[in-house]
Length: 239
Image (cartoon, rainbow, N blue to C red):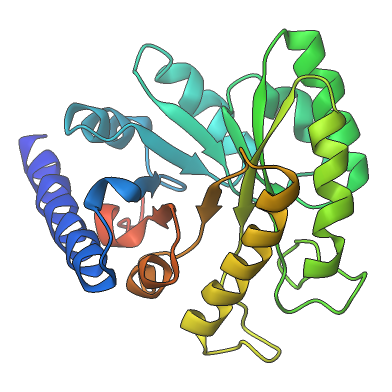
């Protein structure tokens, strides 16, 4: 389907232009920002098209969809990111293919990830999901640990065999003081990141921004943006 490949290539080019323009506006180099294409709900064939177009990072949020897709594309030079809320009963499967889990938000999940990473003989990168809509000690509507809980959880990941503390992730919140204020939300995440890096200098990754707000994320300092719809479009109804 060369038409589909052409469609994805055109969308990729537009997203690349947006990232490049956002970097220029922020006084950043383009190579400071990595594009992760979110392939959830899209078929393995689209993942292959993305790889042929030079994409090297893809993300999924549901293990039941991601596991067979990753297996079907295991010959491709891709890094797989898991970005959805992760239940502990899915950890063994996710550790089998995910290079980075971006949604680490509680101690029990750290323990489960460490156990399965050791069992599989793998090192799994971890991002702590920060919930900017959570009260102190609470969790966000879409998962995540409150900013005040980042230090303790980071220490757990850093000490856990088989895991590597890579940095932080957030989703712009729909409620609370940052609702509708993506730029402010991402700047707050960068403040939390600065605190994390004082204790864990290698944890430099900051994953923020999606199709609608990648410019704000780049302006704030994000190192990775997660883009799905702007690259792959709205998937047609399957008949």
